[in-house]
Length: 375
Image 1: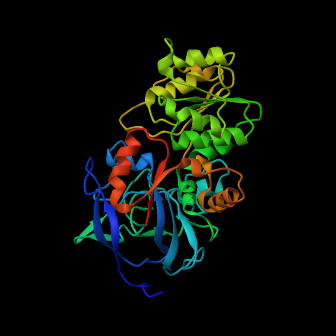
Image 2: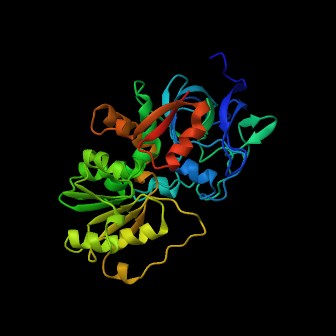
């Protein structure tokens, strides 16, 4: 390709500092080094985690940074040693790496590859440098991906080759949908005939509802404050939806009354400490399982009565729905194209890069649907 081995100049949304709007800039993207892949981004979803990074709910993010981690694109060029993809392949970048050799990757019980960016958050490639430059300044990457840019560079353990006909909405498999859907199927292992409660009716919550339905849950209770989202939740598989504001007693007591003592599985998709406790208290005391999906500020701590666990409940966390990213993402795309599940419900609107700040504001307002940036 004409750009192979060369610096590419392109547009990107740069976060120069926290709590400020993103700035559309011309950046320079260096060629991929050994075991790296440069990708032309076709579409990128805007996730709550991107907003959390900008607002510093996710701490230790290095600025300036190019956010975004939920995308689909085409391989433009590859560095030496790359064998998993070639130029022209359609791919989904992976914010959870899959090195295949660490203890986690070899385990059937974990998908948290040791090369993840959740702990260090260096915002750099493996050689401790960045491939992004703007106005002569180095720009950090975000969760090994950085997709709010026309071109990005990722490690070859952070990319999955997918069907060449995969439509743009499959970018949502890269985070929001994969996270919620997998939490029900992989992490909780929802059983047929069970009762589930999903706290938080955003993209992840809706995806969790689909996972619960496909797993055969008999009742799926959606819990949220935005009643305008209830019809979509019902359409996707929820059997009923409730708003905590409609009751004069704690919602966990309401749920216990509705379910003869509590649900079998609960999912916290809102990212609030108090909701995590409520979700746990909403499960059946002898065997209930609660899965935490929402991110909270690092200075917030979860304090619970040990008795809630001693009597038989289980509290679990889930990152990216437990999927082994490089292996499972292509299968998820195949399942979508075979119409095993829907994705269009997640798409609120498609927008150009120039309107990305408007999309962030819409997300904060609780609007239904994910906004997708088209490049």
